[in-house]
Length: 258
Image (cartoon, rainbow, N blue to C red; front, top):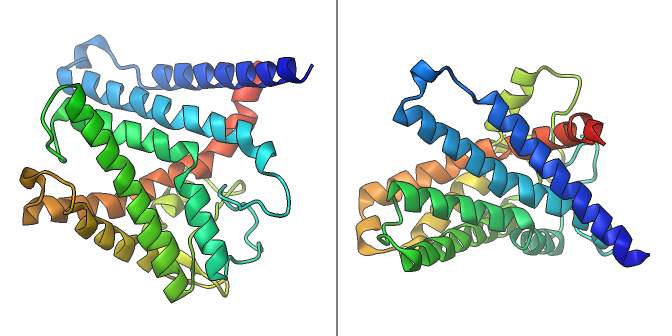
């Protein structure tokens, strides 16, 4: 009975992912007259993002009951603004470990590597399967190092809470989207107030400098490193859209199909 229950749960998550991808595909349809190469390219990027982020989110939901208990670490977005802060260094270290090992990290690594491979952009390892493997390894290292420098080191020293606090229901879509993007530069402190997001900015700067150890020479120029840093900072805001809206999408849209 246990194995059947587990198989049923995985089947349900797979159906949710397929519905998620189907809705996204319908949402980005355009008239045939606009089906130029850039539009097709944009559609490919959106569908790739749906696969690389939707699948890990489903997997993370499925694994959630396994981490229940007093020793678990909350890596999900925080919905209650009155939630107790993550104030100790040990908590932030455990958060870094669980965050880095979460399915979203592997999904993000796959998306970044695939996008870089298709567009032949930094890190410029070339083409072919070996180049893709190097891009994937570099992307995973980028994410892990940014989590370490930002969510652990900087957050511990400057007393910042690295978790994402949702604005949640009761606000308009655009208000929530703007709030998510703004968190790239604003973060909650251990005492509950808000401050400049040194976690993200300094963590991205340290991660960019660290990438100089393994990026190819063509991607270690001053311009390339500056672009790497800017993209990392901005990317944090766009990534926040997933934890802000995923719980609503999962509960109100996907589960209506069962």
